[in-house]
Image: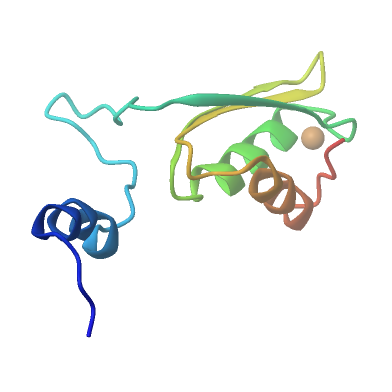
Amino acid sequence: MIVGTGKERRRRLPEVTGIAPRAVKNKNGEKEKMNTQQTTLSVPSIVCGGCASAIKKALDNLRGVNQVDVDTAAKTVTVKHTERVPRQEIVTALDRAGFPAS
Ligand SMILES: [Cu+2]
């Protein structure tokens, strides 16, 4: 039999039943910017705007990604995302799209 105070159990409940947060559009049609983090990766294989489009397409599909900026001159990718998107997930998505990141 589990014994605890009622307060403890009620406080823990949202963690147990909570649904993972995801990027949702607000009433202005913009994606929510709550808990936004920014990750910048060096992607040496970026050559042109076609590369940039392919990268944006690949990363926009990741849940929790709010914005993807590709700098073709600097060969960097900057991603604004929620805290639920770890750096490694972005690296993996880039790799799958054919753009290894360092
Ligand atoms: Cu290209």
